[in-house]
Length: 486
Image 1 (cartoon, rainbow, N blue to C red):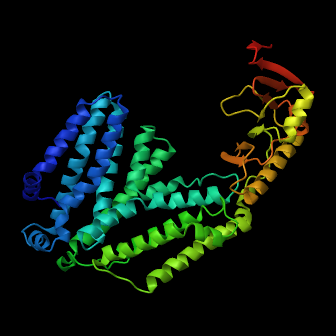
Image 2: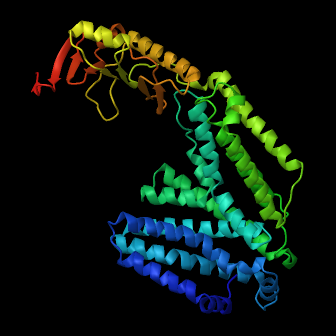
Image 3: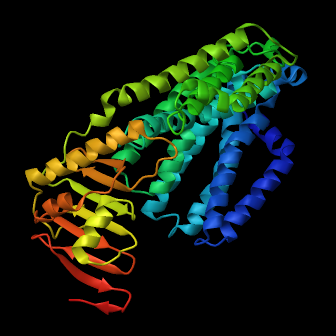
């Protein structure tokens, strides 16, 4: 699995690459440990090298002249593969390791050693994974595209899911699908590096995920390289998961991403498609160009527009159904505020609102605008309040929430929000965010203020009040006179 002669050849033939590595190492060692730009550069160089170095070392598999030469030398393919991976690992990892040792407390420090080990596993897994993807294609362009496309597939998936959820499920802003990062060694490695050396549940799962990817990728890479036919070099990629699969996958991703914007301002799908006709047309042009790149010649078939229109129709149908069926009930995933759940309601009322006139009548003061901040329960970081919210408070909050959900699915682009409500479901450790069409009326606020678990603050242009449990207002600040009331 290792050839000393081939390793020596790589050292001699990659002089410019090794010179670049020396410069990067010096940059890491001589840099400032507290310089955020320097730390970002280290991570950037490591990621770039994890892609570029294996492509350079194994370039011969996609070159007709080189592949015959490399596969005919008196060195086994296993040795060529093992030596190439080892060389790539050392070139990618050593500059990063020098930076960690430089910025750590010392090479013998436990945390430094653990971080070095985590990054070694990440670099080795990424190199093996990228090399495998590089070999899926039968030519240089396809190989590079495969490596990049599959590496960022998890990010594409989570982006589409988050956009659809944000656009069509009231109260939920994102999908808690963090485990998808385990499909990408780079994403997993970035998570490990950001979290430091903690060895918590996330770190352990990430390490196991990297080991699993490494084992599977190494096995498939060995079979792909050792049994690879030399005739595949510089030919069209024919494997199922090669270029055509990637083109279709990212087309589906882009079309669903566009469809996720349907609910913002449009009354009908026809209006939406007409308004986004140009982006749809440009995407189709890119789709056709991708097939041109794949086949190295102009290619057009009735299957291309047929597949494009079919996926576009499915994406728009999903968007329409999500709006018509109000997120298929996912907006009701959180049932009702209870006991120690933490809720905040921040709303504002202008001259045209009922809240504005009720407040003006109550105080005899023209407020210009009224902003209400309602805090229910105790925050995770504030353990002073031990009082649970009452059932009446829970009912009022639920009424606000249901009104906000209805507003979400009826909202038009020209409508403006008049507040927001945040709820932390402590039992399930989930967070929900809603937008209010109308500011809460003064009567509802008074009912909330009766609850010891509720704190109500009302702010105007130049004054701030606290609502007491009996519904009266206590002036806290008068900014116009810069006077503070106790």
